[in-house]
Image (tube, rainbow, N blue to C red; front, side, top):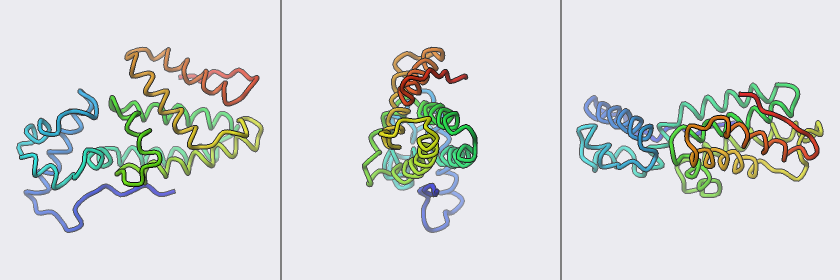
Length: 201
C-alpha cells in the first residue's frame, strides 16, 4: 500500500527557497488548525513573509498544500492499517479503523468534506493518498466479512465515505465527543445487522 510523496519541487531548493517553503507550511498548518482548510491563502503567504506568487510556485493548488501537510499523517494511517490487518477479531479491527479514519478527517475543519470530494477525482492532489487508505479498508473489510462480522454488501468506498460523513457531522456540533462516539457506534451497528456494538474512546 503506497502513499503519494509530498509535492515538492523536483530540483533541490536553494536555502532561501527552502526557508520560504518551510515558513509557508508552518503558517498554513497554523491557519488551517485555527480557521479550517478554507483559510485565506493570501493571509498565509503574508504571514510567511512572501507573496502569493511564491506560495503558488510551491503549492499550485490548495489541495496540493493540504496534501503536503497531511503527508506524515497519511503515512501514520498506513502503518496503523497494516497493524490492524493483523489484529483479531476482524470486526473489532474494522471498528478501530472507522474511528481512526473519522478522527483523521477531523484534523482540520472542512477536511472531511474535502476528502469526500476526492473519492473519484483522479485530478485531486489527495487522490493517491486516499487510494492507499481505500486499499487498507478493502483488506480490513474483507477480513471482517469473511468472519461474518460485517455486511457482505458493503464496499470500502462506502466505508470511507461513511467515516468522513461521521467526521463532517461532528463538525456541525463541535466539542461533543460523546455525540461523535454515538455516531460511530450507530454506524458500526449498521454494518453488523442485528448486533449491538459500542466503540470505546
